[in-house]
Image 1 (tube, helix red, strand yellow):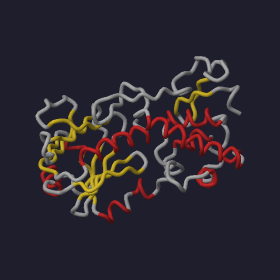
Image 2 (cartoon, rainbow, N blue to C red):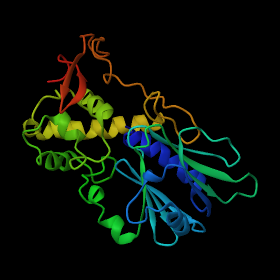
Image 3 (cartoon, helix red, strand yellow):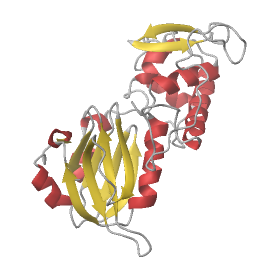
Image 4 (cartoon, rainbow, N blue to C red):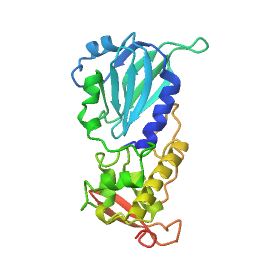
Length: 280
């Protein structure tokens, strides 16, 4: 599943190409991906065609298009979804699920945002302000790790909701921390020198401060590299990510810091890689 850096990379690409543009056409090829109160493809299209995209925002792993009508499009890429912005005449990919065409700039041909999803698990919802504010996943979501207010104390307070849970599993809980998934939980804990098996309540204030800094650092590094290298992720131009994890998916290989063979285990049902020598 795309995590915060991948979704933020997509958000930035969409923002640069779509904000200020008017939606001129909608193509819904996989009707089941349109969720919520307005799920009929024709009704959905009537609500959005002719509206201008005022902003493209992110909350955790969700993307939010703010329309000038006061409505919002809430997208989730799920496991295999990705978005590209291409000239409207570009031939369709066979996994195309949704297309949103927008008005053209004076110096370029009309563009279309295309939502591709090989598994068709992704989704989009049309929401008004009150529906967006009360969306269950958004209201329950934990703090944004890249926000200015995110500190070690913020992290400790959030982790206290899962005191007996292994810290790796707690970091994956979107009600504890927004946007972090398997890749960046492994990477952050490695960089902070914290064993992923430790119960959340055992982290000292100094360790929580260190972990909060490393979470911010690894997410920022990955965003700078356009997401993690993966066969399943591409940005809005079709380019892959460039971030190379230090521990994630490297079980059985030597630690890049000390040379110890990296351990692989399962925590909270997820594959986890760590260095038993560097992480205490």
